Length: 183
Image (cartoon, rainbow, N blue to C red; front, side, top):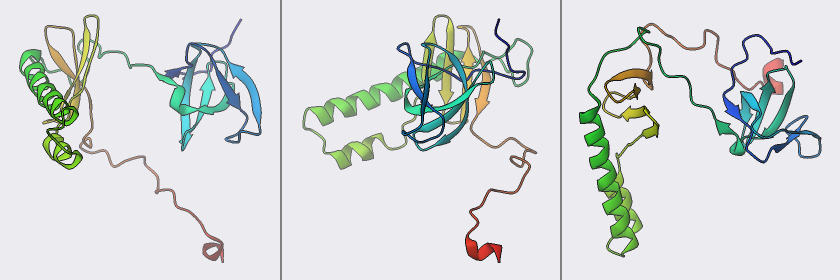
């Protein structure tokens, strides 16, 4: 019987082949490898190193580049920030932006553009579309938000803009203390 740590919510799963793990972000301190598709919660990152915890409370360091992100659940009906939006106009804008990007790639591959011209032509293009069966997550660059859709309507899922009245983590920023600061 496994005991789940209260508040554990997986953010990632281990790749299908499993993965090595370490006691610390140090290749000289290996520990037991992680099982394939094990749900884990990302606690912190240091470069490519990721400190993860498991449902039973066990923690380890892994190469975070190989963790597979778990999508968040779609918004619940009647939950906060749920305005009904027709998905078709935003899908058309995403389709147009993707067509522009593809045309630039074709021109670059065909020798009609150099790298600088390609960067100039694609500068400012932002596209985000994830479709998983009937569920869809669509990025709206004009509003700086991801929307969740079920084919009939879109509702705000998350925004990349600051929330009104939210001043951050609620503590002073972390800073590096040097030996001179201690005196």
